Structure formats: structure tokens, C-alpha cells
Amino acid sequence: FLPALHPWSEAFQLVFLTLGLFLFLYDGINKGELETKRGALPSPLALFLVLAVLYTWRSADYTLSRDFLFILYSYLAIYLLVAHLQEGGRRYVLALLVVLGTFCALHGIYQFFFGFESLLQKIRAPNFRPPPGMAPFMAEVASRIEQKRVFSTFLLPSHFAAFLGMTIPLTTGAFFTVRRITLAFLLLIAASLQILALFLTRSFSGWLSFLLAGTFVFSICMVIRERVSVRRLAGIWVMALTAIGLIFFLLTLLRPDNPFSAKNNPLLLRLLNWKVALRMIWESPFWGRGLATFGLFYPQYQEAGGNVVHHAHNSYLQLGTEMGVLGAGAFIWFALWWTRGMVQALRRDGGQNVPLIMAVLVAGVAFFIHTALDFAFYEPGCGLVAFAILGLGVPYMRRGERLLRVKEGWRSPLALGGLAVSLALCIIFILPFYGRLYYQRAELKLQGRVTIPASGVSDLYRAIRFDPRSSEYHHALGIALFRHLGRKEEGIAEVKKAISLSPLHHHYHFDLGMMYLIMGEREKGEGAIRRAQKLCPFCEDYRKVLQRLRRR
Image 1: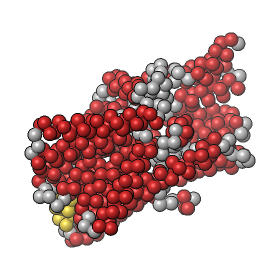
Image 2 (image 1 turned 120 degrees about the vertical axis):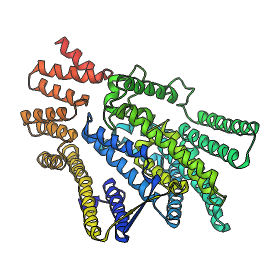
Image 3 (image 1 turned 45 degrees about the vertical axis):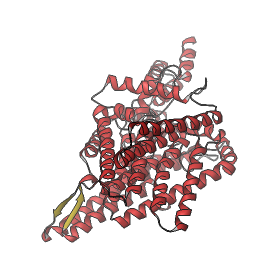
Image 4 (image 1 turned 180 degrees about the horizontal axis):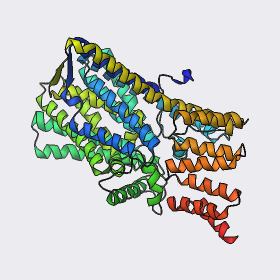
């Protein structure tokens, strides 16, 4: 499976970022002076990460929480590395983000004109099996493809819109800083392409966060640098709200699911999701349920008319359900700390860096606003870019440096210790990744056109050896043993093991109940299905099976 460690795989990214952190530490140790910026790990971010680790170990589903903890680690790593770059390095990162935004915009525009029909044919093919991470969202993805809403390489159009809401300000800021006319012209074209792609996403949340962030930062700049009157400031906001209204009007004409529609109203569905999240927080305000576990608990709280979701569509509320109000408060504190630091940088700067400071500030604020409207924070394609941009802003804050002097006798032990920790982290990241590879290969052997049951079961055992606490693997192994190899008792035992690892997956209980019914143990089977219905009251399949059992 070595070819599977391609440059865009999550495991490779984690390994690369870990080695980057080690090289940064090694450079400081080798020089004898380890210099770190005070804003690179502020108190709110440190508190948030400590709570994230806590709510991974005390989680309703350890593997779900652990996988998202790895994502948070990548956010922290990119933030630290970018924050400590020199000016030349930061300009390379800025250029990379501008190029990335432009290529994604071009891909989205191509998708709009040429890509949707082939995508729909692929999704509707009888043998199509989406990646496990995308499987719960395929109905949403298909509906957005039918509406010709572009999403480029992202999961959903709203995530692509969040990404463009961060790259457009950076492209615009770069346009105002370059001196060569040719380069300025290219940047103008790049910004225009990104704005067009943003419109083609037809995302209300993307446009709202982008325009609100831009208006907020422009207003702050006018107050700080131009001393504008309250009347002019009010005029700026009236023009911005008018622009938002016009864009929303156009999007309403282009989208059947709009805030004024009677069916699939996105605003109403979000309000129902937020209401559920608030109920969950109210029941347990000070003790969270576990990182990234909102989707496990949601079916128990789902209200009539609400859609089946795996995220609250407001990451601050979702963090409140998963990490308690302290976890959500820590992240909000970090957002306010960063915004305040950038506003102070805008006030202090003499003028040369103002366009870049404003660009980074707009991009960061757009991300923080979008986090309240969707779940881009939980999507690595958006979150990783966002934290790189947040890291770009740290040097402008000028909060000083911490200087740690390293004695010559300690340099070699510290370097070897850092290398050992880095290698250990890389192994920790890669082991679950290989477990996932074996699991995916087993799925192909068990559910493909030509089944190879014995080999598929062997791969599932290997997957469990790499990741023994994954309830998903134990559940799949139990089903395979029961259905394909006829080892019914072992299959039931494996499904029970999956339930013990993660008792909130309602379909585990349903599958266990059906196994018992096939074995002729009706009482146990009915009890397991009742537990499944209790965990997911709105599931019609569970209700119908229980009704048939009662008729008998």
C-alpha cells in the first residue's frame, strides 16, 4: 500500500507537517537559541487543544474523535509553521494560496460548463460506491450537482464558497501591493475568476460571510485611518447591505431551495439544526459528549421536519455540544483575540503593509463568520487553509518573541528526543491510515461484482490489528462472518464488540437484532431493534420491522 501515501493523502500531510515542526525545532536547537513568537500559541488556542485531547479520550466514539483530533493537529501545525516564517516565506505562502484559489476557481468554472453530466452518470451508476467519508453526504452532493452548483474539489458548494471567501481577499491584497503591471493584470484576472466561481457556487453563507467580513474590515480601516463620521460609516453599511440584498435576490431566482421556498428551505433547516444543538448544550453545558460526535447524538434529538445531518451547520454550537461551553468559548476567545490583534496591527502600521493586513484580516474574519453558518471548520480543505491564513497574520501583531537558550551539552539529546517524538507521531498517524486501506479493500472484496469472502474477512482482521478500537471495522467483520462465511456466533460477537466500543450507532443495534431474528431468538432481536429505534426515532425502517413483528 505504499503508493497510497500520495502527497494529497491526509496521512502524508500529517507526516509532512510533523517533520516540518521537527525541522523548525531542530534549527533553533542547532543555533542554540529557539525563538518563538508569543502569538503563535496563545492561551485560548492552547486551552482549546487541551480540551480537544480530553474530549477525545472521554468520547462516545473514540475513533471519530481521534480522527478529527488529527485534523486539529494539522491546523495547529500549519498555524505554527506559517506564523514563524520570515517575510519571504510568508510571501511564498500568500502566492501559493492565490494560485490555489485561481486553479480551484478554473476547475469550478470548467465543472459548471462541462463536468456535471459525467458526475451524475458516475454517481447514479449501480456499482458506484462513494468513499466512507462522503457516503453520508451523497444525497446532498447529488442534489447540488442537479442544480449546477459548483464545488470544485470540495465536498459541498458552501465549502468551496468558504474557501473562495478567503482567497479572494488575498488575491485582491496582492493586487494592491505589486508594482509590475503584468503581474497586477494577472492578479486582477485571478480575482475575477474567483468571484465568478463564488457566484457559481450559489452559496448564501459564502456570499454573506465574504461581504460582511469585507464591510467590517473596510469600516474599521475608515474609522482608524480616515476618521470618517458616523453618517459616512452608516452609508458604507447601507451600501453593503444593499449589495447583499441584490446578490441574495439573484441567488433566490437561481436556487429552488432558498430562504423563501416552502420546501427544503435552507434557513428553516438550519434553525432546526441550531435548536437541536442548543437543546444538547442545555442538557449538558459543562461536559461535552466527545469531539466530532454531534452526528451520533443528533438522531435522538431530531425534530419533525428536520433533516438528517451530521453537523450542526454552526461550528460554535457544535463545539458546545461536543466540548461543552468551555470548549466553544475557548475557540470564540481565540477568534476574538486574533481579530483584535489584527485590528491593532492595522492601527499601528505606517502604510506599506496595510493592503496585506486588510486582506488577511478579511480572510480570517470571513472564515470566523462562515463557521457560524456552516461546518467548513470540520472540512480540512477549508480549515487547513484558514489556519495558514491566521498564521500569516501573527507576525503583523508584533507581540514579541520568547527566546529559549539551549546549552551546547543539551543540543544533541534534545534533537534526538525531538526526532523520536516526531517519528512516534508519524507512526501514530500512519497506523489508522493503513487500517482504513485494508477496510476499503475488504469492502471491494465483499461487495464488489466478484466477491472473495475469505480474503475480505482476512483484510478486516488486518484492519482491526492496525486500529483495534474502530467500531466500524468490528461491525463490518461481524456482518461478513455472519453473512458470507456462516460463522454466526462469531459474527454476533463482533457486532456486540462494535456496540460496546460505540453504543450510539443505531444501525449496529438494528443489524444485531436482525441477526438474532435469523437465529430464531425473537426476544433478543426485537429488543435490539427497539434500542435502534430509541436511538433514531424517525427511522421508518425500524418502525416497519417492529410492526411486522407485532403482527406475528
